[in-house]
Amino acid sequence: MKFPRILLLFVAIPLLTSAMAHKFYVSTTKIEYVKDKQSLQIISKIFIDDLEDVLQERYDKNLSYGTKKESKREEEFLKDYLLKKFEISLNGKRVEYDYIGREYEIDMIKIYLEVTGISEVRSIEVSNSMLMEMFEEQQNIIHYKAGDLRRSLILEKENPKGMLNFN
Image (cartoon, rainbow, N blue to C red; front, side, top):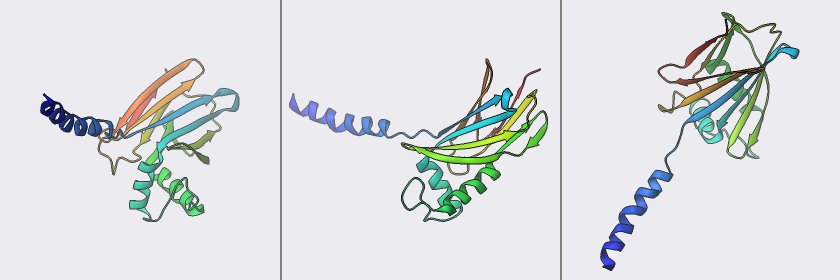
């Protein structure tokens, strides 16, 4: 009777630990249109270790985010990466965004961006291919909010661009 229980433990423990170690590759980006300020305020949340892996492979193996070793160059590489992987078009025209800054929240990096001078949003197209070059299962979720209106997109490697129309 004891042998089957021990055998069950040897089989069950590795299965349970591998299930708990499964990694999800997800980022979320909240885009909010603030009519009073005529701006889009954007906050992206990305797992630090995933972002660090991609940026180390792309730029420099010694990059370190959210640690005491972090320097100004980490921020420059992050900005460069964002410009290549994250784009927004409003009402059919690509817009430039300003990098406001970043902060760390446990195992996430929060990146703040803003687009100013926006009088109305009839459509918004978002292209977000961040982390997709390294993680096949990467999903970048976009949440758009304007007053009471809320819409979402899920962007994947096969389809890293999505559009919302408000006509």
